[in-house]
Length: 68
Image (cartoon, rainbow, N blue to C red):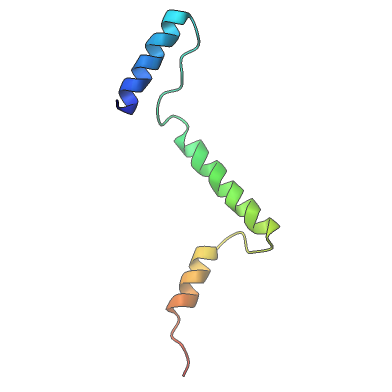
């Protein structure tokens, strides 16, 4: 069963029982991504790591030519 089919089934069931309809699939995706980003930044601060620019810093460190 696909997500859309499950959503339609849940919507029909909610209407039949007089309950509020569930949110549409993908409706809160952006909010979830933002919450995850904030959580990762918070965790970095608590662990005393830089909260921003960690990926760029790691890439720069890996790609920097090594001195012989």
